[in-house]
Length: 135
Image (cartoon, rainbow, N blue to C red; front, side, top):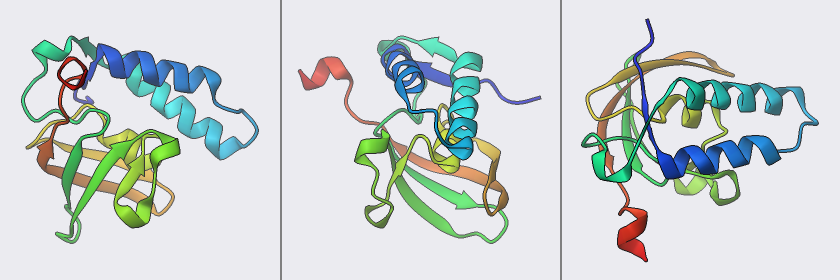
């Protein structure tokens, strides 16, 4: 059974809008959108004030460990227009980006990527300030 993930109300709204408005031309892009929609649909939607500690949300900086080889990598989970892999900013529409959403520090997850299935452990999460704290 797949572990239930948590997504903030704000992220759920923004991701749903992204899914609804995204272009539908390319089959691979459509597959990624469908996988993201599946994650949003299965998630428990929570208020920002009731987030579990260390939860991966949009804009979180995440340290992942590849359990196959022990490699540790750090990414910031961002919307597609902000993605820059060379700078460590991974799109929510990238397979690994979709795969990590909603997990928290200490969790493990497996996800299918173009290079094959990966199994990751979330080592650390730096959560961005709440939307209400930024305003």
